Image (cartoon, rainbow, N blue to C red; front, top):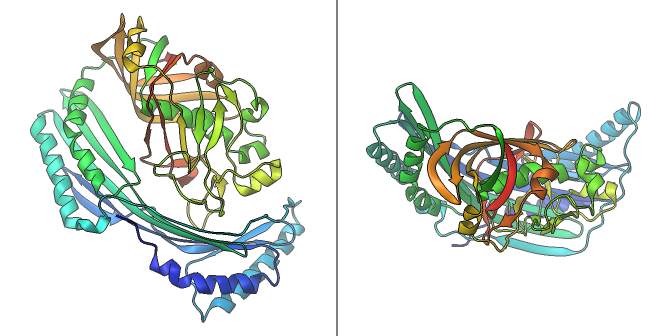
Length: 475
């Protein structure tokens, strides 16, 4: 079913165009991003039920103008025909005061005018079941049944949580040249099991996500028993003996590596600030020739897919690594202007009240030609790694650390019943990527949770890839 556009934004469009016309008399570039996102977050567990507005809900506008030196922005929640002149005067007053204050204390960066072509375009997503197809009560009842099913499967469970978050995103982007609008729904969910045996407590989880709505709950139902079973098995898991191993990474762990290794490290605002080592390796080998890596809103169909970014740039499919060679990074408009490159449609804001940064969208390794069974049979002793817990990277030195839920032992080319948990994978990014020797035939992406820029500026992203075989340090 097709997703409908926000009536609030459509109703404000003529007024916003009037505002652009007023501001254009004083400023050579004016654009407006309008956002109306709404959603609900559901949680069901042994201790109770909660229903709240999604943390991704927002409604408001941000104006960007060229102030004669660089760019100023002004955000506000609402505007109507009676307040449009008042808003325009307030914007002009604040920008003029800002420039006067900054000129006396800072050396300001100069930016040219953003060059735009005439463009009118729209995108409306589709889902199988719209959020309103089930009431909140029906969703909670369904989730409660999943929780009860889990407890009926194991006496070792101390808690089982079912979480579901659905968000309807509507955005418009207007300037003298552009009239863009988009409306789509993404959702995410979690099954989270905590098991205990004597004084040993372990947890397991599985995440779900996509440009979907209520149909995601059906996907979650099919995995309840698997999550419970994994939590029980982890109770008997042992620590991994530290060392270097041949490993096979599931698509989830491949995505974690892609995100941490060459995600943040190629966000090109870091190039401008000289905070990323990747800028020194453009057109050089940084990975095995089997490795091709993509990012872009148009590169996949997942939670970070869109028609245009928060600066009005159309989403693209960016090849970051091509057969082992680092080709380019991901840029917002301003970093692209500084570096004299073409923006890739990666300018994203946490909200209309926040600055746009160069951010990842759908980041993933491309497919190869190997079969999973051949990858497993090729390993004398190693592990199949699965379950993302967390990750860290250092763009300046290319160190990477991935916290992984568990590894399943591979011995003499066969999977055993031995499980190690948790697993910490560390290394130097080029060493890890150059060690990739096999890549499977299909790609899977996941996009639950959020990605921060450092410790803040959270944005929705997805990552993934095929199964990959590599050498890695585990501990």
